[in-house]
Amino acid sequence: MKNTLITIAAVAISFVSGAAYAQQSKSLQPGDQLPMSGTVLKDASRGGDMPYFKAADKNGLLVMFSCNTCPFVVKNESTTRKTIEYARNHGVGVVIINSNEAKRDGDDAYDAMKQYAKGQGYTVPYLVDENSVLADLFGANHTPEVFLFNNKNVLVYKGAMNDNPGNPEKAQVMYISNAIDAVVAGKEPNPKSTKSIGCSIKRKA
Image 1: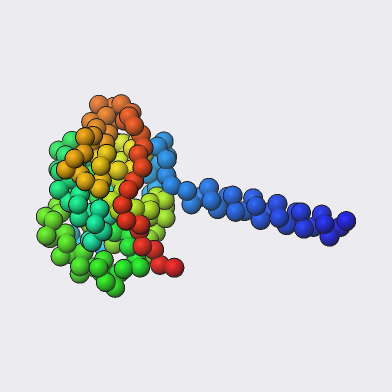
Image 2: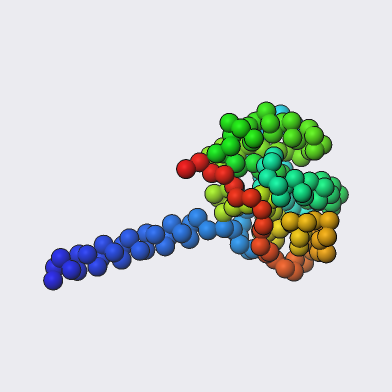
């Protein structure tokens, strides 16, 4: 009987610990605060180092998880450039994060990121997320995937930039532009979240 009680207790502790871990590692949801990680990241587009949240502007911050070669990223290159311009014109800062740590010696190496940023004409930070630290903090899993925060550092929209990431030329709704409009107007975006569709972020095993 004693051994049975010990076994039950051990299983219960294991279950609670596992649940707590799952809760900590889940994706950020609308209403959550911007994770203020003090981690300083290398900027492939402009040189130097910076904490990612320093990219915020008067109306908020758009955090975009992306990379160099994902087919969904490539298809949405024009959408990305337009989104960057739209956000900055509306007082929303932009930072692009590359968390593909498992490809850091290949397609997503720092030098490859520099070349890609130059080719895309990035004027915003394109940061190296070593060991996928930020991707884990955000619960980001795809490229491209966006997280929009208002000027109070509250997440107001997350997910896809548009309603057709696989064929953006046929997109009917620009979720991210609509969300930015709502933020500037002091309103809540509708929808607040959409499903992000793209390549998986390549974390190290």
